[in-house]
Length: 52
Image (tube, rainbow, N blue to C red; front, side):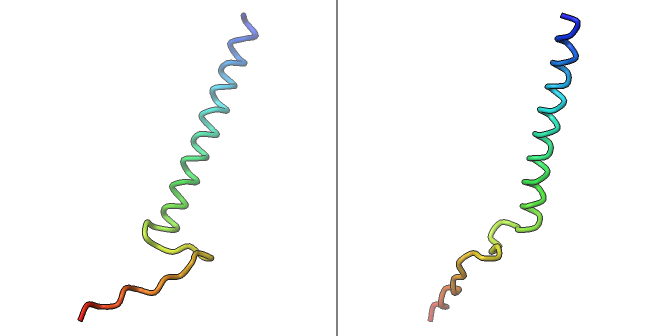
């Protein structure tokens, strides 16, 4: 039991560290490429023609 507690704590630390990395990467990607913006390599579309 005494060996189990540190293993659980290390496991939780790794879990939360990986979760924080994933959330940080998602935040940085959304900051770098805001919603509606085209990423490099995406298909470019012409803007809609104005209504006359």
